[in-house]
Amino acid sequence: MSTLKVGAIRGVSASSDAITVASDGTASAKLTSINDGALSNRNLLINSAFEIWQRGTTAASGASGGNRYLADRWSVPNRTRMAQSTDVPAGFKYAILLDREQTGGSEPFTIHQGIEKDNIRKTGSYTLSFYAKSSDISSVNINVQDRTTVAEGGTNHASIVTNQAVSITSSWARYTYTFTLSNASLTGTCLRISIGNTSASQHDELLLTGIQLETGSVATDIEKRSFGQELALCQRYFLRFKNDASDHGVFCTAVSYGTTDQRSGIFNFPTSMRASPSFSISDVSHFQILGLGSSISNINIADVGTSVSGCGVRVHTGDTLTSGQGIICRANNTGSAYFDFDAEL
Image: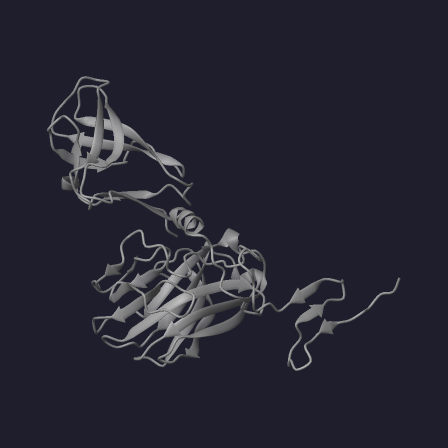
């Protein structure tokens, strides 16, 4: 038996090594074509191909200051219009279209995602890759920050990569950038990845999709998860429970207590959320109580109890009932009704 000892393996016409072997015997491979399912869970970003849109598929620009979400897990400054687009590179279904509709203000023309600190597996080299296209701007900037929250403003962050410029064109192409994380880089709650343009003018458009962050110095093929996997990952941070048709879909059941106008029910989340979420509804007029005929004045989770697994829902109505009487809270013959649970970073 014989042993072949090498430090690297390289193709005949290649300019770099395909496999490198360290002194301890471990090997690293440069992989550019990966079958579905191989090397799974390497992409640290969620909804990278913009297939999950729980909040809707288009949102006009808003007032100056702050940021908001549309495509799941991706936040954008308020002044930016965003929409789902089918103008995509080969192999993708959707991209996100960003358009800064308004002039003035200081918000950058940028998209962000926060990665929980516990999901950053190790220090060392990380590679960010993405597909981009724009007929209006010639470059985008990459920013990586260690932060306590993803939201704009405040001073609780440290820059790891600052305004790294990447030239882009009017045709779809993939771009990559490699940076290094050290122990000192990871002191906050999350790592925020940002791609955009800090000087975009009115009606400049940018299309992005296939945004991937992985360990190492090589950009591998975009990891494609199933729709169900991607949705469950998104629902850890945000859940919209909605009525899909103009009918009377049931949202929750509840029980009257005492002789008050308050009924309490239980709502269980399909997956554990990152933290106890905040709660909002579409509009009280979108809901009704089956069989009572009284109007709903409010629906909330205040003082009812909430956790990462579910919450109590309190329904306030205009009448009183005998203690213990049950009710059903349902959509008021509309497809616009929804409950929102938000646990974003």
